[in-house]
Image (cartoon, one colour):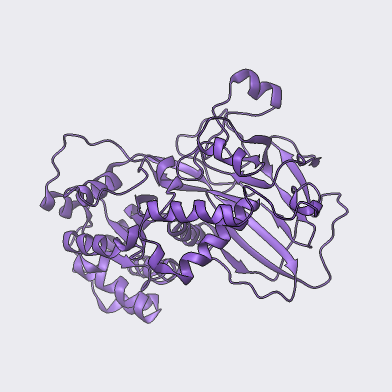
Length: 442
């Protein structure tokens, strides 16, 4: 992990070593408040010339393309400028309906369809256009860039994609990084739940769009850990990468760690970021299979409820509840094929930990929520925390909670929150070595 810039309102008792922190803002209740359409528009709408300048810069992939739109020297920036990214395929295919409502309330130049405008292009050309105009003396563009907030309408994958793209601003020292709010349109929506935006969007509620925008411009800022991931695996396999990973030439996996596992002579390396959680084992296998099934047969994905039913059914077919190959030790658990080394909080020494023999899935969790709002880590008593050497979990504490799931029946009780998952460790650095030559470091 890397050391972050100073944290707004940070608690000095929290762990000091952490990843870059990403600003988000928490949803606030606005029950009983009447939101005027025109008042809201005055607070959020860009001057027309800035919207057109950003649009042309993104379309031409040239940050200087917007220079043809001149500032008149009089136009002021809005109080709370905001742009919205919409995954039009999310929300049971209702994302496109939401996009239309947003464009009607705002303007086309401030609402981006992710199938048309990719988040990296927005960062590289759209924000760079504002920065370029500000450098030319456009005070309105400078103020919009400094005040800008981003609202993302989609599931956890969509939000993670936008977060990862905005994270590039940190690496390029292009401050400030716009904070993010969420309109939940996905299946699990765990990021949305963790920051108070809820688990679903009320399409039937006429004022829902206005209220979401109002919450986005008034919500208080909070922080979220961003975890850098490096993956190394033997060369030769053709892999379809998710948005969160990209190829990299350099792959240094914890060189100060004394371990027998070594990188293969010819390896392929990837890097990326994650904000929710990642898993290894049966849980990951089911999620991967569900993702491909949904891509191959999109007509099955009618909404969150249908997706959850398909996901549950897919779990049964993949041996989550009844493994058909019990004669092969590698199918009984992860203990035979994985090695885990960790660095605990405020500790510089490496420690190899044993994976319980019954565990068939290992999850590294960054949030309170997992699997559509469940809390598998549980609410632990102070006595238990002290006994295990843990601290209270937070989304901005620089720590991952590592837990295990044994098999489908155990996972079912965990998801029903009748029991907690198998607690393994709480760490701020986590290299994993899998028996087939795959190495993962976060």
